Image (cartoon, rainbow, N blue to C red):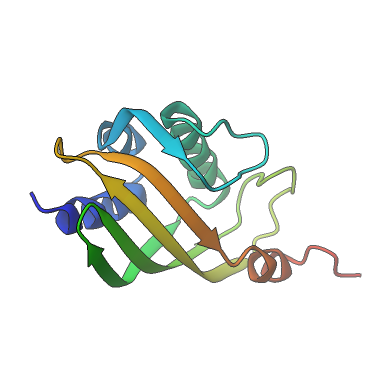
Length: 135
């Protein structure tokens, strides 16, 4: 399977809520370079993060809009949508919908697994859509 096919499969598995299968696509030495408060930068940390995201946004959907293939590194521009129905980063459910863009960079190795990730999510837009800071 090509790296791009694996990357797209990863998003499909997240959308389906099959986080165990997502973790099997990450190498044991996986390193998360995006700082996520309270989440260790490891395979287990990212797995726990996606489980939390699925609880907070049960209809979570990540849609790939573009992929740029740089050999062992792939860049995906994607859109995250979902309805906030569970606790998220200490915030109680609001019932509000979110629709934000994100950029993911994943480094693959010859074993076909993801060994490293960098990401940027429009967190400000997400928090505004959830009503954080609204009076």
